[in-house]
Image (tube, rainbow, N blue to C red; front, side, top):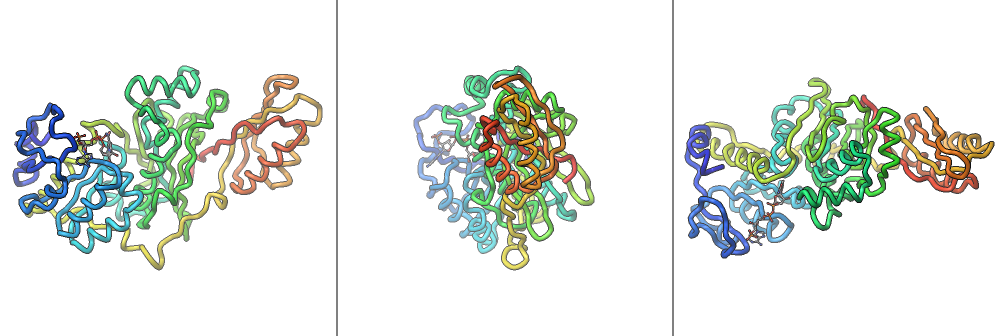
Length: 414
Ligand SMILES: NC(=O)c1ccc[n+]([C@@H]2O[C@H](COP(=O)([O-])OP(=O)(O)OC[C@H]3O[C@@H](n4cnc5c(N)ncnc54)[C@H](OP(=O)(O)O)[C@@H]3O)[C@@H](O)[C@H]2O)c1
């Protein structure tokens, strides 16, 4: 992009942007890019410390040596552009501190949502508003799998195999399927949206490995679509940040986000609902975000714009920063799928357990007969801890063989 769009970029940036050095692991690997071979080096520290380098772009991934390299650059006053969600979600506060102390910008538009502008809209455009909630589909692999399960009725394993054959899923899909990738992105977005440091380890996380074809079929019958959502919500004196599968109404804008596409649906107090949608990964979309950040820095250096990316989380850190409310204290509606015997009195026994935990049932269906019967329930809003106790007691009933699924149902309003 820097080569092919060079004239447009220099006009917009107010200066030419030159790729000074590219640090790689393997100097001998053939590379299909118009960059002279003598610009490639295999010592990233030398590249970062080179006094002729004005901006460091970190797209190597992983924690080390990326963390040390970014800290080195920031502490010597060099701005950094990074796409590294893992690093930001585990060491974000230390990096923000280094950026503030070194008076150097740290930009990371590419770290969440690949080519979708998310960080800058939250940090700049929406800076005057208060965010009530955001809900995002921020992992393309799991969205692809859930889309295939929904539209073709295939199993999760079949859909995963298809995702792997199409290059959407890694050979080891754990980071995607178990929600680690989405949790890192949720942490980064929540820290920007709510001005509070959030680490990936603060995020409640549940992946899609418990979502079955039966759940998807039930969701469809009930007018819902199952998505893996990254949700963060303002709760007054606290916030919630979580990643889990959720049923959303089929007419919600997020329900139409298919295949490997990503989207984040933001609800602001003044702006109302808005959704940012696009390709959340891939070389070209992600490069667009990286190059956009570099241009922002160049513009500022050329005197054409303000210093970008002032760290915002520091403003609320310490006293007054909202705490993160544990999942047990959150309320939601729930879908439950029970394997139960079709005998007189089963529904009464199930209803008694719900009543004992003050979880109110919104609707209930029974399917199948005899020992193969399934009971599907949707609850009204209930506290997570009450629902968990309820599910434990249901599983202990003689007439309930298993509580096969519990999936949260997202309400249209926060
Ligand atoms: N790919 C995406 O769609 C996407 C989207 C958003 C964010 N990201 C983030 O972008 C980062 C990179 O991902 P990627 O998919 O582009 O990875 P990748 O294809 O493996 O590229 C990593 C690059 O960094 C170089 N590198 C790695 N470790 C190095 C070291 N110790 N010293 C010198 N060079 C080193 C590699 O050199 P060699 O070429 O010699 O191996 C390679 O060129 C990750 O943080 C990822 O989370 C990626």
